[in-house]
Image 1 (tube, rainbow, N blue to C red):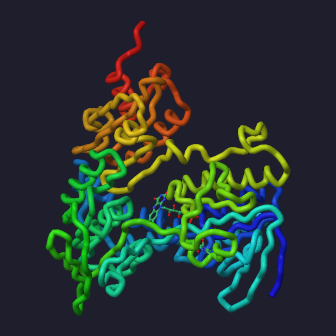
Image 2 (image 1 turned 90 degrees about the horizontal axis):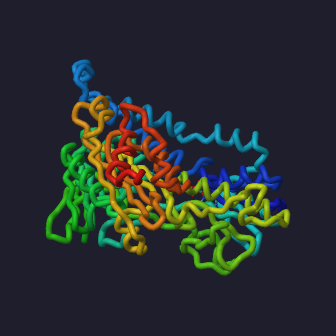
Image 3 (image 1 turned 90 degrees about the vertical axis):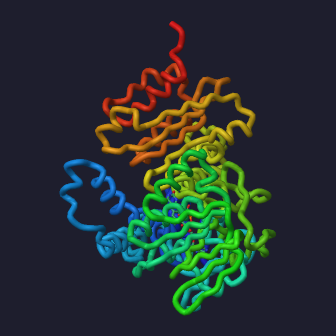
Length: 474
Ligand SMILES: Cc1cc2nc3c(=O)[nH]c(=O)nc-3n(C[C@H](O)[C@H](O)[C@H](O)COP(=O)(O)OP(=O)(O)OC[C@H]3O[C@@H](n4cnc5c(N)ncnc54)[C@H](O)[C@@H]3O)c2cc1C
C-alpha cells in the first residue's frame, strides 16, 4: 500500500472530472484524478458521442432524399455496418490512450481503480489487480462519478436482462425488434437511430414524449417517429416482463402486450454514489450530492460534486461548465481569494438554473434553452409567447423540399428580454447558441432589431419573432 498527498483529488475521469482537474491544475493545484473504467467516461464511449454517431448517417440520407436533384443520386439503402464502423471510430474503439496522453501532457496524475472515501479528504483506490493506493487531499476532493441507467422495479424486468443506454450505443448486432421504455431524450434518440437501421421499434411512454419540453416538440417528434415506422404508445406503463425462447414479452398497464427481441430501459438516471464510502464522511450512499453554485457539497468546506452526480443538469456541456467553475473555485479558495464576482475571473455555476441549453438529436431535432412557457408561468413571470412556423422562412425553402419546423420564444414582459427559446426542425441544433447568447446576455428586444440575420437562412426566425412582438414606437 502507498500513500500520496495532493492539493486536489478528483474522483471520476469523465468529461467533467477531466475539466475539474484541468482547471484546478491551471490554477496551480497539484492534482490527481482517479478512474475505474475509461478516461473520458460515459459521454465519450457510451453516451453523447456514439449515440450521435449512430444517428447521423440515416439523418443525412433522409435529408438528401428530401432534395430534388440529390435524391435521384441515391441508389441504395443505409449501410448499417458502415454506420457501426463509424460509431466505433467515434468511440475510439473504447480505448482511452489519447485521453490518457492528454492527462500526461497536462501534468495531471492518473490513478486507475475504484475510489472510496476512508475519511475527510482521504480516498482509497483499489486497482483491478488489488493494488491499494491511499490519497490525501490538502485542499479539496471533487466527486465526478456521473450517473448510471435507472432500472425500475417492474416484476421480471431485471430477469430479462434489458439493455441500458450503454448496450444501445455500443451494440454490434442490430436486433430485428426493440421495445424502448421511456420517452425522454435517450428513448427518443435511440428510437430514431434504430428505426433508421430498419429495426421494428416500439416506444413505451408513461406520459407524453419529451414532456419536459414545449408540447409541440414532443408532438412533432412523435409524428416523425411514426412516419419512420416506430409504434409510439403514450400514457402506458410496463407492469410485467418475461422472456420466451427468442423474445421479451412486456405487459402494459392498458392490458396490451409488446413482443420484441431486445428491451431498452431509458427511464432516467441514478447517481454513481452507492460504493463510494459516502457513509464514512456523513452522507447517504446512493444519493445525489446537493451543491451550491460553487459546486461545494452542502454542509462541507472541502467536498465538491460536479457533473451528473449533483443532479443539477445532466448534460456534458453543463457539467463541463460546472467543472470550470469548480476548478477555479477550488484554486481560489486554496489561495484565500474570494470567489463571487472575483476580478481575476473565477466564475460560479449560475447558468444551471434558468439558462440550460439542450439539443435532442431526433429527426427533426429539438433545440431548447431557458424556460418553457409552462415553466415561466409556473415561476410567475409575466410573459408573451411568440410562435413561428419555420417552413414559412425563405431559408427553409432552399434548405429542403418539405421543411417542417416550429420555433417559440418566451419574452419576459417586465424586462423586455427573452427567457426561453425552442426550435424544432432539421439541423436546428446550430441555431441554438444564438438564443443562448441572447438569453444569458439579457439582450433587450429593442437591441435585437440590430442583430440582423443573414438571408436566406433559417435564422430569419429572429426577425419574424421581432415582427410578431411589434416594432418599438418611433
Ligand atoms: C445515451 C446518452 C446520450 C447522451 N447524449 C448527450 C448529448 O448528446 N449531449 C449532452 O450534453 N449530454 C448527453 N448525455 C449526458 C452525458 O452523457 C452526461 O451528462 C455526462 O456524461 C456526465 O459526465 P460526468 O463526467 O458527470 O459523468 P461520466 O461521464 O459518467 O463520468 C464519470 C466517471 O467516473 C468514473 N467512476 C464512477 N465511480 C467511480 C469510482 N468510485 N472510482 C473511480 N471512478 C469512478 C466512471 O467510470 C466514469 O468514467 C447523454 C447521456 C446518455 C445516457
